[in-house]
Structures are given as C-alpha cells and as structure tokens.
Length: 328
Length: 97
Image 1 (cartoon, one colour):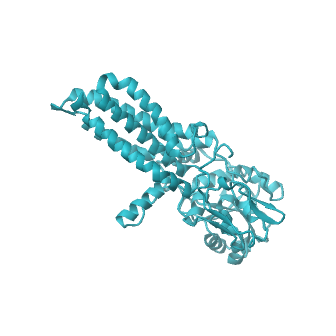
Image 2 (cartoon, chains in turn blue, orange):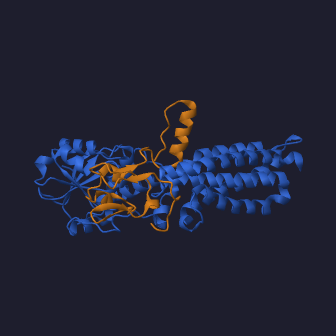
C-alpha cells in the first residue's frame, strides 16, 4: 500500500509550476488506486479524488496529522470538477476502483467521502447499489477537509460554495498565456510581414513602423483580454465576457488612436483600433471556460452575438490596416 | 460568489415540486447554493446563480430536477469547436479543459 507524504517536496512544487504554466499539464497524473496517509485503520475515513497530480497534491498537503485512506480514481489526469462534467469521475469508475482495491476487506465501514465538485458525475445514491459503499459529499475545497471530518462530517454554507478570488484567478493566467503562445506568434509574424505592403509594393521602413505598431497593439490587446479581464473580472462592468473584453479593448483602441494616428494615418489607425477591440473581446470570451460560474447556455447565448461582431470587426480592421498605406 | 453574476435567465434549470421528496441532496451538492429545502420541499432560491453543472439533477433520487443536458463544459472553446464540427461534419475537437 503506497504511503503518501502530507508535505510537498521540491519536485512536487516544480511539477505544480509545470502544470499551472501548461508545460506539463496533459500528462500530470498519478496511478489510480488506494493510498494511505498517516496510519489508517479499518475505521478510518476513505477520501475519493481524481488522478490529476495537482488535485492529489492539493488534497494530501491538507492532511497533515490525520489518518485516512485516499482512493484515487482514473480521470485521465483531469481535475475532479471537469472530470465529473465529462463523465470520467463517475459512479461506475468509483465502484470499479473500490472493487479493484478490495476496499471491502480494507475497511470495516461502508462510506466514501466524495469531493462536492464530483457531484455532477457521481450519484451518491447509485454508488451504494453499485459497490455497497454509501457516498457522503464532503466540502468543495481540500483546505476544509480536516474541519469537515472533525465536525462529524458536516459542511457549512461557505464550505459548500465555490469561490473565485483574485489569487484563484491569477493562478489561471500562466496557462491562458501558454495556450495562446503559438497562435499569437503566428499572428504576429503574419502581421509584421504584411505591414510592409504599400503603393510602392514593399518597404522595410513600413515594416518597422507599421509592423512595430501593430505588434504593440496586438500585445496590449492580448494583455487586456487574457490577463486584465481575469484579474479585474468582478470590477469590469457588464456580465457578458465579450463585452467585458470589448470594454478593455476600447481603452487599447483609444490609446492606439492617440499614439499612432500621426504615424500611420486615419485608415490604418481605425483598422488597428478595430483589431484591438476584437482581439481583447475574443480572448475575454474564451476565459468563460476557466471560470466556475458561467453556464453553457449563457456562454452560447453571448457567443452568438459576440463572435459575429468580433469576426466582422477583425476582418474590417485588418482590411483598413492593410489599405492604410494606399490612402495615406 | 455574489460579486460574480452571469447573464440573467440564461440557465436551463427546472424543478418539479410535485416530484420532490425533500431529501435535500440538491441543497448539499449545489456549488452556488441555488436550492434551499423549505418545509420539506426543495425551492430554487437563486435561479441566476445556476451554472448548469448538473450536480443536483445527477443526485436527485426522483428525477425532479432538469438541467441543460449538454454535458460539455461551459466554455467558449467547446462551443466554438462544436459549431465548427457542425460545419465540417467531423467530431468536435477537445477544448482542453
């Protein structure tokens, strides 16, 4: 029986950075099965979790000084909530791991403590019929698990509510940036290459001036849409994400006009402003997937309008920007 | 989570009070505290906080709760991929969530 430490090592912390930044996220999993923390006995509680190592580490690092079993189920290295939504953190999978680990012989009781966020995929009622163990939903966060166990397996309103505070939002930014790197670099190279075209066919001076300015505007729009929207989320007016992003994009657009109008002319500067707004708006809309409060129906609703406006604005913007040198 | 409110009336969530037996499971599992058991019947007390995670419907013993059954995650990339899949006729690409 593998015994796990409740203090994370240096390599665990490095692994966390790898997963959070996206460098090593898709393969960050551990072997499913039964683990023990401290010196658990047949009466010790059994906590169920996913086999994403970031999840497993978050749980075990909160278990210092307690004796419990951890049953890790195979969610293909995905966290509990997302896996529950996708159906891999499921009643059937837990029942399967219970049988595989021979849990009936290990413990005397017939109860599994489930993470509350597993509820979209696990029916506590069906679990009993599937494997003989009754499911009890614990708190949302691993930080509350000790308190939950100490208070006779009860959770208060706060322990049962998700949060999305500044720190939790900031932790998501590295991954957002990492996922953007490739398309961002590709877009930037194309923009700079195309910036040289004009009435005299191609000029390097224009590449420097126009390429440099569109690159700066694009970087600012990405920062606005992917970083600032995440950090300032509750304080940006509006509910729809594409509008929140558009609002910050307008600020970038205003800066663009003030800063670059004397150098590139009206047509190109309007193009850059439109481009900035659509990039920021699109990236903000993409952030919906990282938040714990947007409904699929809501996202679909805002995308119908948002995406259409973003596409039109981006195409029109790029057209104006390319046409700029011909109208100067 | 009161500082985070999403589009009003967008979520698809239905509760059939006549089928409810007041077990309180929906109240336990909801991460946004949408339900409250009042006089042995579940009541929706904060409809617009619903994010359609489906925890309540999955754990309702009598099937009294209906939530948008599309089990994709509530993310723009997933929707974009499923729209693209409709056009190309292929299977939607993973959203990476």
